Length: 414
Image (tube, rainbow, N blue to C red):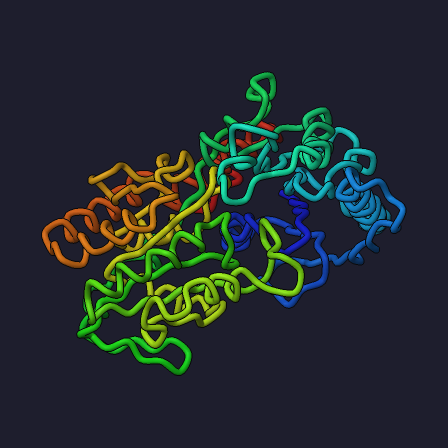
């Protein structure tokens, strides 16, 4: 088959599917994307130029849609060039979030379109208004509603969609459900697996060594910000570090903006470090920024307690990988996390807003080896039952087969 993928940050959510298709050695794979350094042998990357920002006088509620429209135009031009060179895809697979797929059907009418639906925005009841510490101004509601412009246009393109969790599907209007298939994402269970022997070895992160005698508490986010509970984690440090002198905390994440900007001229890390200055032993807390994937995996496998916090928003890949790695997890008692963690079966759940409760939950894992072992085993068991890569790829193959009329057997690897 001839596959066309579209995602502004190659390979995006399609890494595992693309690798699988390449391994099958019987498909032509083309990927339209913005330029980046990522490469997968066997995939033809076709870049499009990053769109210019909207003009200064663009209405503030539709600046995102203006950018999405520019992306859609750039991708359509790139697609038309591919068509002019003789490329005719059997299916187009992409992410609807940035508008890139909006005009692709004009270039190849009738070609099946499978779009990734990640999140439908609401002005209440989900992430907006969840955290009373950071209230949303009512005046911002028009902008939030306008963020669904691409979502709504995408749902009227006549294609089909997929989403990775039941909770993410529930954010969409009920009338859209029949257009979106729930396709749980998998994890490489061979790569992400428990390695208990790592607790007997020093772990190096950057220039710092974590000794086997130290209790390692880990936290991971793309960027350190309130959406991922960074403020709650920071406020849990005084009771956590005060209770045990052998605890070392590693908080992985950048100082950029993924879901909410800090006040102008600062970062959430700087703000929280200022708030918590002098309240805990800062020498025992490491902020390595973003780290390479191998170090990240070894850190999870070495972790004595892993913390995952989030607003009601899209669950991170790190949660799946922590489960697969057999981490003893403390997660926030929020809907996206409850879809993965059952309290006291494969992890512990605690209130997103309770730093003391978070610290107590982490300490219970550090002090109760029987509990820790049971939850670690439960995490890995959950991953094996629900996050298998073979099942994920088979689901993708079946969905592609339904849309193209070609059987899943032909799409799946041997």
